[in-house]
Image (cartoon, rainbow, N blue to C red):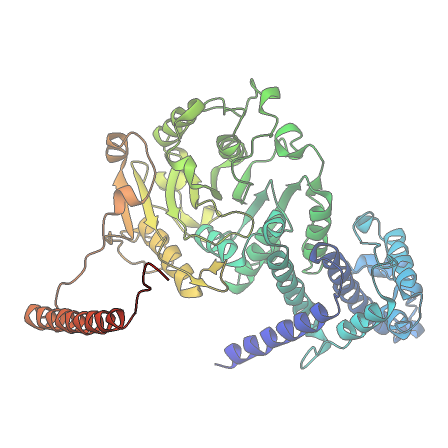
Length: 540
């Protein structure tokens, strides 16, 4: 119960901060203001970490410590913050008319001292549309964040604030916001289903890094060792890549393998030789200008050459190409990829199914995504026919947190989650924790059912639920011509017809009689009113 109260207090901090910061936005659009606010939150984070170590080193001067020695900070994996960029200096300068230039200069100074931040930090604070008074108030607002009991919590608090603000800016930007942000509930669902305990986590279209942040959170929440996972990413939008680098740095996550290039993952794969244990991704839907005409003979197209006009099946094969022999992938795709047969897509889907790569398909509710109203589904893939766990490999030798999987090479699990979730505003829906737990536990029970000997969990025997989930043989999928729409397999929900017919019929009859009586009454009134109307004579 205490933990729940702490979470509620934390959320209050985030919401209160957002409302206050948003009031200071004035005439700046959300896309620009995002860089202003998130840059300051990041600066506050690295300043706190620096100031804490600086104080420790100052206390140890008589033992030979030097609080201005950059190497002291590098040894502790802390960014060195020069005097002109330290938060105390900026906050003391917040009322100066040139505060924008002071902050921009501070950002430049930090990048000069920390090579890994070169080109990452925003220098937008001296722009004419950013009022110096509002900027000073924003600095004071962020500077006065209440960290609760101890400063030790500051990094965690600022990490939550950064993540919350990313989501709020994405909502404010609407369609454009979806280009850098995958809704948190979708990310949580992907991570909960894949359970990335140990190994290499890869997202070749990583946006602002939400998949990595949630993977790290998953490991910590399940008492795993965060050092057991390493992350690899790629992003083609430089502004979004900068957000990702800051988002990961504020969480203390090594982002050295999160790469940027303008060409993107298809034309310039930044991790050509990577074989990942987990791939978690939300690629843009139905992209037509992905460079497919230049890649007709690419080695990644093992299951068929994807059409030039749509990148969906190029993404799927790119993910599979980067999967380790025991790797798993959970990705978001437009729902049309479940049924499309145009330009060879049906044949590619058939080949993936026959190879036993498709593990589970989840049909998602509408309105989950900010940048599109296109219906979406989750695809979960793994090399089932080559998975050592299916051949008696002890669970502890895998990378699944001690889990083993039963042989599902002749089955696909279909989950229809279209009726789950709740509206958070008129345009957007999200999945609740209960929704996520229901979908994830259904998948886990299916993979491990009946419970396997040596599995650390007791396990629950999986059963089909009409209207929600069904485990289907490949023969059934072949009968339906390799269509993967969950609704075709899960059927309709069982509904108990337990109402009293006499009561229902009597109630309906009474309602009808009342409506007929009302109609007769209204007709009488209309006729009486019409009779009172005097028509003019023809001669008038």
